[in-house]
Length: 217
Image 1 (cartoon, rainbow, N blue to C red):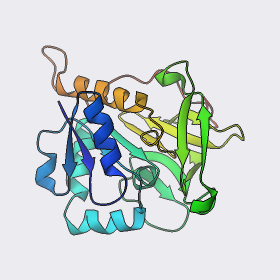
Image 2 (image 1 turned 120 degrees about the vertical axis):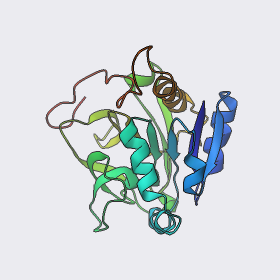
Image 3 (image 1 turned 30 degrees about the horizontal axis):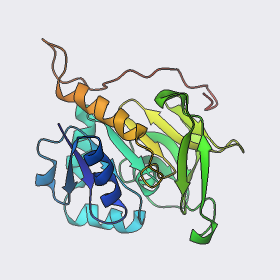
């Protein structure tokens, strides 16, 4: 099993390190050919505007969308969440509108306002998840088919899932947190090796709970 990590800009090395520690082959993705044979893709934190330009420059837009359409898991952190959102409130057009959410960039302020927090994420276990927030976005609107995975104490939504696409406003990979990557690896395994007699499933690993109509858990 091979999981790609978009390696155009940003904190992609840390994601590759986490995958390596889990015994999963991580593949730096810079060109469409790098997506050949991958069973999932991670979109790291960084500068979403720069990533947008490089995605277009290197012809990655349609190949990544096609990977998602096939049912492979996609996981975005921080800027990766912005890239996967259907609506960006700052005015930019969406890049990969796979998550029916609206995001606000730099919602917590500048880099000097970075912080760490622990959040309950029942999908990945009973122990709280520790996340690092660096110029992080927040989710301002959640569509009816989106599961809210985590909120901060103030109620702000910071992790979501819609079928095979997961996104967090924070960086688990910078906090030594591996459970999101383990989840993606499990989903990738299901995508890569569907049950006997079945083709590749479009939406592996069923959602565990229906989202509240107003975006709650």
